[in-house]
Image 1 (tube, rainbow, N blue to C red):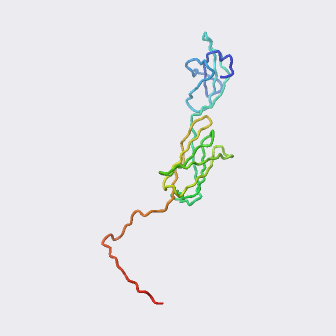
Image 2: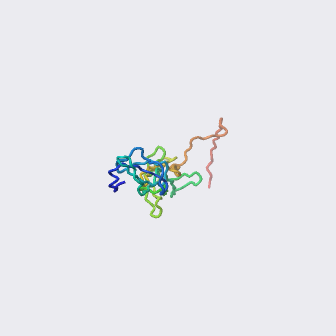
Length: 211
């Protein structure tokens, strides 16, 4: 409401509608507004149109002003993550061996800045992935990280954080939240012998052969 010098000296009612014309119904503010700003908590995310009226000291209300529009957005940005490993990869189980991995992050709406992303192995230290915006697709970011031999095998979890253009912070990952690391070979945990016991061991002495 900045710039309305006359209204700045008045008490105001604010009217809201999802249609630009006509704006009807009750005003959204219970008490008259005496400042040049007002915070309106809208019921859903959509485009709203606002008009104001000035109320004199005697209670006479002016006609509606020209409408001004604003887009309400309370939905935080979500992300989906796609991984492209360059090391050995088991397509059946999804396990990734040591090597570099390309990451593509697609967000649900434009962001203020590149999102934060890290990959944390099970009982391991997080690896931060530096992301760069795709110049052709505003909602897509790419980066690379390395699966090191020193990382523990098992599930690694992605952590994501970003803010959209109006400041809503999102941390939800709709797909690609976890990956499977295979940084070590298989280990023998038990051996079964059949038959169990007793086992007869036969020693045989081999005679040296003559050439």
